[in-house]
Image 1 (tube, helix red, strand yellow):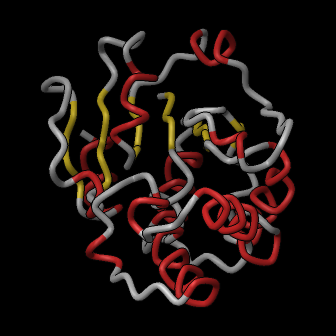
Image 2: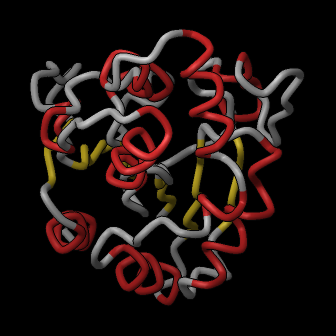
Length: 199
C-alpha cells in the first residue's frame, strides 16, 4: 500500500497557528472557522507586502516547530508504516523549510515517513529562488493507492492516478468545494481515515 499524506492541516494545525500569527503581526481578528479561502491573503485581508512577510514568518523554523499535531495523525501513520505501507509526506513548503519540517516529523515519532517538498501552489514568490526536492516529472512517476489532502487546489495533482482514493480532511476552506469524482471522500478525523484505509 502506498499512501500520500499532505503536511499542513492534515498532519498539523497550520491554519490555527496562522490565525494567531495574523493577529500578532497585523492585528487581524479572523476566526479559524471563517477561513473560507485557501489563499490566506484573502482570508486575512493582507496586501501583497503583508502576505509576503506573513508567509516568510510562517515558514521560519521556530514557527514550523510550534505547530500542534492534528489529533491521531502520528499514531495512524505509524500503524501504516508498521504494516509495511509506504507513506510519503508531500508538502507544498519550499525546500528551505525541509530541515525544520523533518525535525517536526521526527519529534512526533514519524522518523520513518518520507518527506518531499513539491511546488504544489507556486508559492516560491514569497521566498525568492526557492527550491523544491520533488520535480513535477518525478512526482508524476509516483503511484499511490490513497491520498490524504485538505486543499482543493491540490486535487489536480491526482489526475494521473484514476484509481486513487482521495480522503479529504474536512477544513473550513474545502467545505464548499465540489469533488472531481466518486473516489473522493470527506473525512473528519484520523480515525475515520484509518478505518477507510483498513477497508
